[in-house]
Amino acid sequence: VPDARDCWLARNGRRPSPDEEAFEEIAVGLGLRFLSLTPVLAASPEPLERLYFGEGHWTPSAHAIAAHALAAAMRDLVATQPGDDPQP
Image (cartoon, rainbow, N blue to C red; front, top):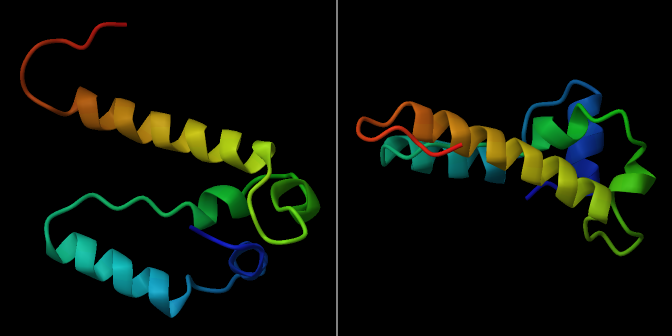
């Protein structure tokens, strides 16, 4: 889960944090799908003050952005699975 600093760094062209890179490497190594929310939040046009409360937790806007990204990833996952067609 990216914090405001991670998001700011990503907006300024920095790579993900070493912790996030390690987590991705472990997940991929285990054959798991990995979705980083750092670039998702960094790509938002919202100023960081609208994504993070002063103490660092996400605002409702950040949660909504993350929810849309997770929903899209889940739709893609379901669409690529063999079996019954998903219900609309």
